[in-house]
Length: 154
Image (tube, rainbow, N blue to C red; front, side, top):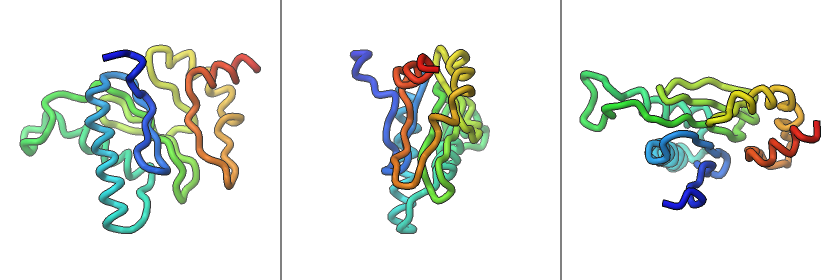
């Protein structure tokens, strides 16, 4: 597999995106779960799923590993991937971080990956400038290059 062919930021639904860091094969399993959940929700209720509900559904799958009474589809090990779910729903812009254990928290700004510590401190300084979403604008997940450009300007 070519490293340049690996997508680390993907679309879950028209209003939700996901960034990943870790084992890509594990991420694909969780991303597929998120996509199925959003489509099932749309066809059942004729409305989009909230970002928190999508994150909760994926978290429920990630938390199933190692359960003694688990169904045959339960995982034998934790997923080796951290995910960021971001999007805009009726509550406004939302961002959730899910760690490999399956626990998730809501964030204002968050960096994941090998250099996340340094990026996280820089994000805290510039997050208000980056996270402003006005009505009519599209929500945007910033790439490493875009963040470096903004941080350089400060």
